[in-house]
Length: 513
Ligand code: KIV
Ligand code: ZN
Image (cartoon, rainbow, N blue to C red; front, side):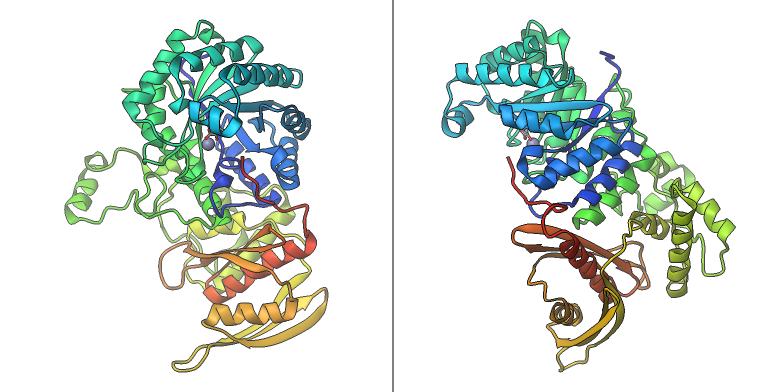
């Protein structure tokens, strides 16, 4: 093991997806996995294959498409979980099975109804089985943060003897304090006799807002893998935020004697992609990736920055991929200028026909919006996965007037036939959605509606995410336009197309652990 290397294990697609309301479909998961690979994440936890058909397919598609990052699948310490995880990983270049069982008194007694001895035996059996599929096996004693230290060391020692190559210490309920969690890691590493045979990892939840602090304290005490998520997504209050861990370690090289492989210039782009797909906006004052993280409002600060950047900035905005909000292109910009910009932003599509499509979308946007910023172009690329759709937007007329009910007239092209409907609603978006439902008759339920502005200004593009469900299957839809109502209509149509194309298999049926 290289002591100077801090392994970044991203669990946005597994624990992150366990955030209430953050389910993603398979295409979206593959898109995020590809962004994580570009970010140079070492390990991508792609899902929990036993949880649903959708989860299994997502892990297996990601395993096929990712080449450099290790692809990890989660499995309880059960035979069926492990063999299904192995099956989902069969095409991965570098597969890892992550198996877990709880070790805290409360979990063993109340949840598992198992004795400590049974837990040890079950863990040993699970790791031995996982080793028959891959050499790279991670073991987590769930709720380690509330487990008895002596018992924890015993389980870990057996796990390493059984072949676990990574031992992950989860603070499952986010209960620990930084000094305590750091000491726990130090104690484990020093008391487990075979600890030199495994990499020690941590997985901290943010219930008390301490996930990042606890993870960093663990790193200072010998942990060499951190499990984290983009934007700190995750079960309940979330997991440690990847961007905060990575930038702290990099910025405070005077404190940390290790560093990550992360290409930090891709941090902002990945954060925006995850926010757009999940519909979870990033709070403006969020560390590293919030809109205000590098904005200086006060005159004194602005004056200081002009004189010397270091007066008020400890990191460079460019290092996380924040390109200055300069006006880049407009309606008269030609193909070559656009190509140069796309190359500078490092987001060139793979094929020339995809580039042509992107250029067409850019021109279309430039007709509506005078100033095209880098963020607009990045967003156009993020929304590029277009497939042939059965339901297409054709025409919309929405009116709102004081004292009158908002009214919408929608025309959709469904498999070549124009279908129209008119409806009232509580607002312009509601009226438009009601008209769409009159045409499509999906009988789906709207679970989430979220709007995010891509840049500032009243002509900024609004990015809308909708989440609908039918028969407990969830479908996400995205749309962007300078007109918020049109963006909303496009987002709903996108979700309805997914429902129509794939009533079951391509979508995620939620089932946590
Ligand atoms: O929080 C937790 O304990 C987990 C484990 C499965 C690692 O997510
Ligand atoms: Zn977790």
